[in-house]
Length: 492
Image 1 (tube, one colour):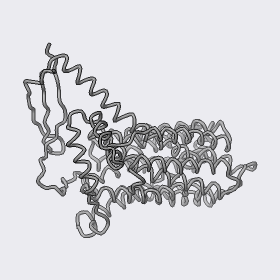
Image 2 (cartoon, rainbow, N blue to C red; image 1 turned 90 degrees about the vertical axis):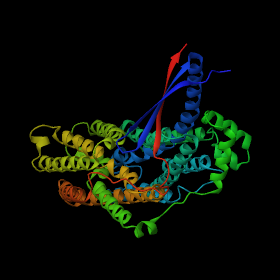
Image 3 (tube, rainbow, N blue to C red; image 1 turned 180 degrees about the horizontal axis):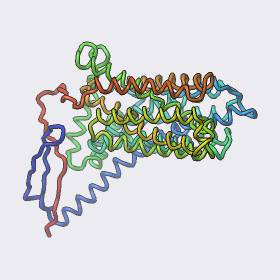
Image 4 (cartoon, helix red, strand yellow; image 1 turned 90 degrees about the horizontal axis):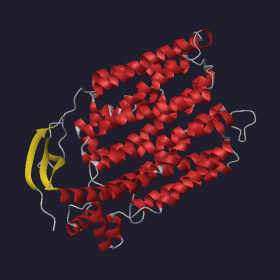
């Protein structure tokens, strides 16, 4: 029989949000520590590996997200296998985002027993989309393919998050959910790596094979405890719970899950937001901030990356575009894990002001043809700095404000609203960029982005608070103490 832990010490302190946290320190026999370590590793594997497997769904979507940059060069050429015009290019790009918006609206709807089957359904839609792209003969095939892949991804994203929440506990679940998007961005970067070296059909076939592999992997996902309970496999659910949560009583936890399944959580929507003055103002501020984020110009530069660098007379635009995508990925990592630690208003202002200055530099570079007359990579330096400063601030911070500005019961609705509006704004901004770049001088769209950026700086300076007042959650009387860590020291 294992010897119990003893000599417990409690250390209380207050974190940056004013919440009380406690750290427990124990002395323990060496064999007890070894058992705890083995249990910890086993539990981590049961939680992390299935969640990582489910997140693979985002890679085929990332391949489609990065599809336009290299494939537009092929499709707009004289010997294109599918004839499209520059006017149609923004519409084709936008259909992916239409699909994402449509799928997101239904992403919280359960399919079958739970999220595993929703993930499989989303992957089937993505696979069918890539099959259609592979066999496409005209623009309608491109449109159907992109809207199917977008819808499959939009729906699957909600199911993936539910799957992670059912298989893990905070703070691990929060960390794994943050990582989900990086699978998509890895597919996005992969598109820039593969795209320049293959033709349209080969790219579609490679993406189809990747999608088929990911779909096959989803069938191997274990059912979550809730899914096992819904299928009346109570004993299997208890066994899985003993792996996922070795410190709790599986019998009690299974009873809680049965109760949770019957008691659906309350989710508030737009009507409740409009009735509350504070939430109504926050909702409006989030909307305007999202408009500033999208209309400051990042989405079109990611759709037309190669075209932008080609029109700038930059050598090796394919390789320069790959560098742009890699910097975007690195900046997203920084924006997700580092930026939220700092003052959000200050970071938004730094980001907006930097982007404003860089747009002015971009206009000067184009107007005076500095790439041709002085240094050939001037435009590259400006655009690289632009994507870094835009992504670590304007592109990353607005989404984090949802948790700061809205109570828990409102966040599901606001998150869906954010994703749908994000997609529609990216679509319209891309179309505006395409019209301006084809009808006017090359520097004109950047003048438009500069004007939006000036408004963005003014809006952030006046309306975004430096500090966010703590929200009053629905459960006003719950203890506000978090156990942040348990430290164990060896004693033989």
